[in-house]
Length: 436
View 1 (spheres, rainbow, N blue to C red):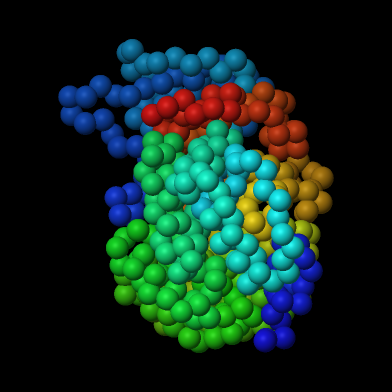
View 2: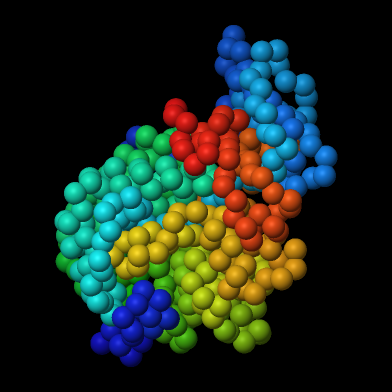
């Protein structure tokens, strides 16, 4: 067992994290703003009246034409939606979520003690077999719920292992197809049980990538869990290179162990010219680095085009987003697991996750609260290659409407999302999906 193995950690999800310190395929990974109206077809237009972008003092109208906001007058016959003086904010992007594992919406699940990634993975299998609702329905229920809370896109990790075969990938893929009118989804084939330590996993990762069912292949703690740094990364990066998919690796390893894995990831990214296609999630070896070492590592990550994600688990494990961004490293925010075998917590609400990011960062000033919101809105958009939305002409017409005073107050109070708009269409109202 490697000295940084999670086996010696406590019996909580956070304890493990601290201790371990193809129909909708490519088209859904970076959906562009809605296409222009076809010749002879009337423009699809909606006027959202009496709204206050970012909490502006004076209400205005937002005019959406074929999925984009425009400064011009609305075409004749445009639908009109009264915003009632509500604040308009961009919808958010969940850069790291596990919808295949969820028991959200199911009868209460009592969890068993577990103290290592391997033990939690065993509990995943038990829960998978115990839940009566099919995986694809549970995933779609959770992903649809995320839409009602103001999520416009997500990167969904689906477990791939002999215990599940490709059921997670297929289930999340089904949910992606059914929600394509409201949500952009990238799917990662994630080897929660390890790439090397669990025979049969590499073949399933290869199949998922070869068939176009996923947009990325994942890895997990090459040293601390798989105990096979070079072999795991050779498999994962080899699959990505052969099939033209991206990479997203969970890295809970800390200190020197994590840095060794991270630098090996950087080296392979450069060697295979995969700049811009590699993400490392969690990256607990980065927080706490001395300033000069952090700056040097950030420069290496930026040069390799590697992005990072954080789920803001605690003040000592959240990534230093501002400093990384200053060096050109993209950082996304995610909600991680939602009521799964690892934890009873989670809600797939990215506004709440931005709230948690501000909380663990001890935010006080308005600009600090706004920065936390932007991490959830813009950081994830850049990570998924989506256009950012700023509520200006030319921006995607993707926004939510809430009652409140200003953005910082909304981030703190977390009011109900009264209306959620995707590409100029209302996709959720008062916490419920509105249909297709």
